[in-house]
Amino acid sequence: MSALSPNLYEEAEENRLQEIQANLRKLEHRDWWLWTLAMVVMLLLTLAVASLTFPGLLKFEDPIFQYGLNQAVRGLVGLVLLFNTYTIYQQVMIKRLRRQFSQQLDAMSRLHSRAEEFHKQATVDPLTGLCNRRVGEQHLAAEAERSQRYGHPLTVLVLDLNNFKQINDQYGHPAGDQVLKEFAQRLVTTIRVSDLAVRMGGDEFLVILLECPSEQVQAMLARLKPLEVEYHGEKIPVSFSAGWVSYESSETPEQFLERADRTLYADKRAGKARDAQLPVAR
Image (cartoon, rainbow, N blue to C red; front, top):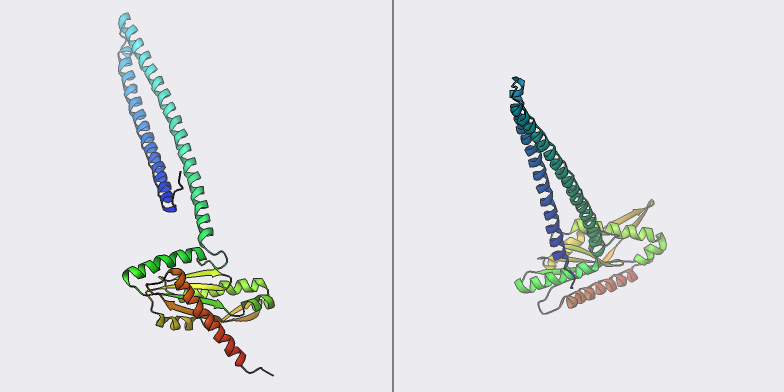
């Protein structure tokens, strides 16, 4: 049997949850009607017993009448006991079913929580909270197809932190993790809600900019600078290299990313060349 897709699985779980909730509502309705019926029957039986015993209160001495009256009263008392037994049985069954459905709901709630946790682990980078590489590539492929079909502009921006290895060596890996987290937070607050920020791995990030011409990327990058991360009383300057390209309808998502990477590496080489030309402080 083939495995259910995530959407079909979620739909099946939702249907099962709705079914259990519907059964619980039916039980509540059944319980309410049972108590109402019990009260009505008890009232009618009480009135019947009272009406049959009323002639006895008037001192009728006919033995046959007294015998029939006694038998009728005993029969009604028996009916009362029988009905009480049936009511108790129904209450026990209702409580048992309610307990079973409640256990099923608790089990489904735990499964749903675990499924959400697994989904988060599979789609979210645990350090930065951004989408991971797999989700980013899937989203990019979908948006590239949409751009090719409807002609909407699509731009990808690739970012890479400069000298990140030196930060880890000088301040330690916890400081490097702090730099990644704060840079990711700054990136999320800089882009639009419709855009998607992704941690591709290490110190490399990807931003998928929907319906954003590449000319507007410079303004967004300006909002990312400057950035300093404070760690144990020390301020760590953070800089980055960036490369971005617009989607061309003739290319695959892999070719799209490859072009963006080439612009990123060109920016990194240019940055290193600029640093090499700076005068050395004496």
